[in-house]
Each structure stands twice: as structure tokens, then as C-alpha cells.
Length: 78
Image (cartoon, one colour):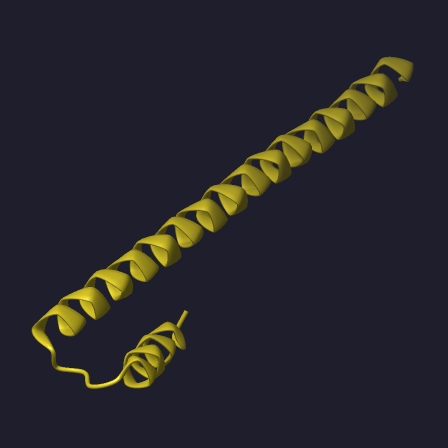
């Protein structure tokens, strides 16, 4: 009977190791998602800047204050 107790202990350790590995993998995936969201935010900011420059070049916005307000408004969703 002692061998059965030992093997159940190994099973418990094995299960704990599996859970630990899964948690590590989950943590990696979460960090990867955070990095991707940050990349998307950075690309969104770059697009907003380009759009603002195009609008300014076309003269669709009047004063510098209007341009600043428009840029600030576009950055709100971020």
C-alpha cells in the first residue's frame, strides 16, 4: 500500500505542475495581448496625427485653436 500513496503524491505534484505551466502560459498570453493593444493604440494615434495634418494642409480647419481642439477630440477614444 505505501507505493499507492507515493504514486498519488506524484499525481498531485504532476497536476500542480500542469496548473503552474498553464498559469505561466496564460500570463504570457495576457502580456502578448497587452502588447498588441498598445501597438494598436500607437497606430491609432499615428493615424489621427496624419488625418489632422491632412486636414490642416487642406485648410479645412481655421485657427490653430480649432486644430488643437480637433486633435484633442480625436484622441478622446484612446
